[in-house]
Length: 365
Image (cartoon, rainbow, N blue to C red; front, side, top):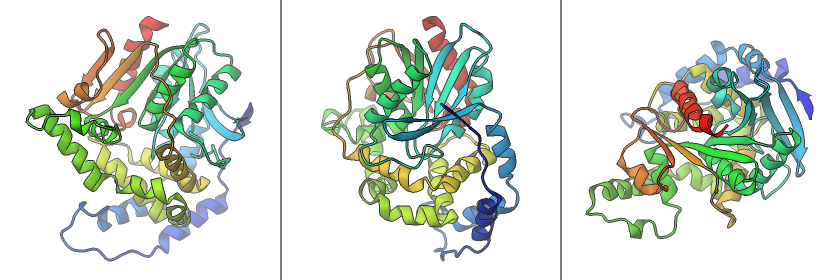
């Protein structure tokens, strides 16, 4: 375990500002709004704030308040935050982000949760400072094996897992692989994400009845994801290297690529500085391309692992009737529905995520 501290060279920060100032902007058709991507005026405003108003050094200092480490597992450099509770009897929680995110997503959870839990918050292989990507093959299951080894090295015999998006898949895989040590698996989701995930499940559409009002909504969302919402994924699932040139060379491209998804997938306002800290990590580490490669790997993987046998908890944000139908769970499963929020609840409604984690893991510790 190697102690780590973020220290972006000033030359890198100056280069970012210069590249933002010298950006070439595409023409835009009138009246199209968000229907064809991020509107020019919105991205201009965000890019200008990134260049002149956003304070990376303040964000860097905030991240450096938390103990950070790197270690090599299965040939891959892994960067993680390890925030230990003052309680000696505290249980550990392993928290995993998804795409296009990073440990920055969970900054609002660290202070309240660390009062009672030891927190291990790694960056997925190929993301942020978990770079460079060591090679091909970094699927969710391989990442889960690395996380099991990480927790073993840290000396945790009992721990819980939590995640959303890709992090939900990794957390479920960790729970299945290390059921002797994982006390429970808690994930967050939202209706559009549940419907999008269903499009990848063989035969799911055939099992839904278009005359049933709930099934009809699910089918419409599945169609909308296939027809309009999955373009970003189709590119990365097939040509990650090609799109990587733009993500690595143009801060405007990297900003637009991430900002679009946060706009589409959130339902509550998120902190602009927190969003830009996330984007900045991708930019300074050049991890846009390696993150894309991991999505390619998962899309071409046939290894999904077994379902976890440990207690499971689900927190659904922006909830409606569709999610319970798409995620059938046995009686007694922890299930909480929130009428607000979306795909990034740790940024949209952190207090609710903290409360639900406490409600789920409290009886298990």
